[in-house]
Image 1 (cartoon, rainbow, N blue to C red):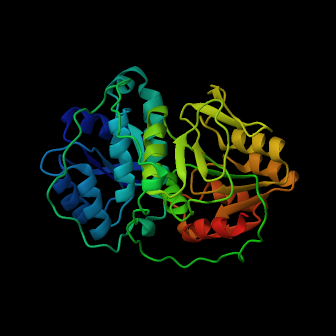
Image 2 (image 1 turned 120 degrees about the horizontal axis):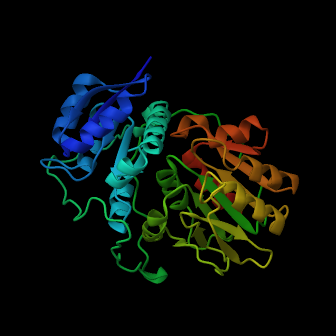
Length: 382
């Protein structure tokens, strides 16, 4: 059965182009279009699509407000289009918090220059998120007000950046902001973990990861005893904004990793987009150029593999929601060295791909629901 898609964008050119690309796939059917957020809500209720592609900056109602209403009234996987700028990253992260499943850069040049590559990527994204766990997009909080939020000043502008305010110092760090409550999902869980003096916690994730990491890391205390490295599949322009966001929300410190950074307890280092992150035996971080032969930049396998070589049996690795199997081979190396590997359970994943690869390969020492992982990390590390 074809995946039914609703295309939402105020640009007539972009609506037509996205519709043409999707309609060329025999397993995708564009069932409707909308020019603003209000129309998107009405069309989502009337057409009941399997997937919605959503622009952010639109008249009458912006995309984030529309996503919040859709998640309240007819939860549907949403693929956001965003610009590859610092501001575009901030807006996209807000959209993911609102319930969107994934995002793609909105770049008219790529559509003109690499139509086949764009077609392949867009159709793959639509197919993958059509199979996402939609029940985790349903919020139990009241529906938001209909008033639109201010729109960003740019839609697509490569290379530009907007400097965000510096994070508050640790002494003035506020309590973690609550993430909107979501509908409970029953899940089987492994027993509570055994306590151990881990030298490193390594977390890898992809689709659904920004929200998942936020839920896990906001549960950790400021005095968390182990260093943390994070690998999230994300464009280069997004990781700095994402690290800043996490740093403001969490009691631990979070920053985008730089070459030469030293691991320390209570600090999480996020692998920069477009590059690879490795750990050496002295506890220093190495940032290397992204290898074009690798599908993922950053790649979970690369970071996990270097951690296995440097720390032997003293690593606790966690694989969260995401497509594909990145992390499986790195986890295999960690297990061979005696380290522990946890996987997120299927019920709480947006996409049960990366954790499933760990479980099917019999590499998981424990399987936990998303809301258990942060609590168990705090219990396990001494």
